[in-house]
Amino acid sequence: MNALHVNENFLTKHRKSLSIGVALLAVYIVWGSTYLGIKIAIETFPPFLMAGIRFVIAGALLYGFVVYKEKKRPRLIEWRDTTVIGVLLLLGGNGLVVIAEKTIATSIAAIIIATVPLWMILFAWVLNVQSKPSKSTLIGTLIGFVGVAILMFPNSTEVFHLDMQGLVLSLLAAILWSLGSIYSQRAVLPSSVMLSTAMQMLSGGGVLIVVALFKGEWQQFHIENLSLRSIEALLYLILIGSLVGFSAYVWLLKNVSPYLASTYAFVNPLVALGLGYFFADEILSSKALIATVLIISAVVMITLFKAKKRSAQ
Image 1 (cartoon, helix red, strand yellow):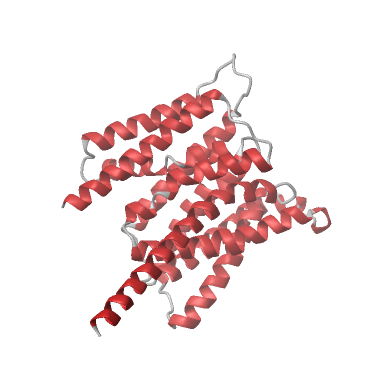
Image 2 (cartoon, rainbow, N blue to C red):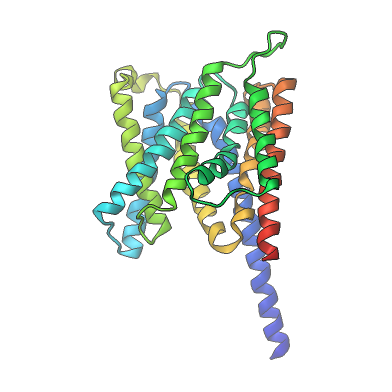
């Protein structure tokens, strides 16, 4: 009986380890690949309209599944707060990245979005959500912002020039995503994380579609002009990027430390860089490579320090 019990424990731990590995791989690759997916989708889709369609469909599918399985109905105040979060994350965060990718490489957008943990630390401190960051955290944050400054500083002698508007939009997207994430910590949300996310995707996606209407994107949209690869990219973003990627991340948050789950922040840019190089003919300049090393090193430093501090408590 003891040997049987030991074997069952071993198999249980082995299955969980395997599940963690698969979930991490999904978040790393899937979320890293969405930058290329966006780039391909907006080749023939208007940008805000594409993002709105993506999140409304993904949100509707997830909402229907959760309501059917959990038999829960959200309150009006929960719709209010999820709408605020959805607007900040999906219109401000994702929507601006979609526009930015019209003029900058997918890898550059991913590198700038990797600064989200740095902005969250800064805003959480300024807004008194968290106590003053430690010296190591401040040093890591400073290194990360130096990387951003290098990336955005114009250099007339460089062969590869980066579009300043695209860089600024990506940076603003990272800032708004950070503010939305911080707001979510004090918002009134459903107890079900899946239901909350479905509501955020529905509300944020709906606002994206409204913005597309005011920008005249509906008039520019003609089904006969859509390419097959753009349609396939949109389907990938809906089914894999929004549903599979998010589900894997939610599962990780419940089964591993948040610091391990958050390692996607410095793996995604590397995935985006590789995919952009092989499938979109994107090349990083020496300046961008230096900025990449600084930003990713800063995020790794802060993440590992927090993990080490937590394990010591």
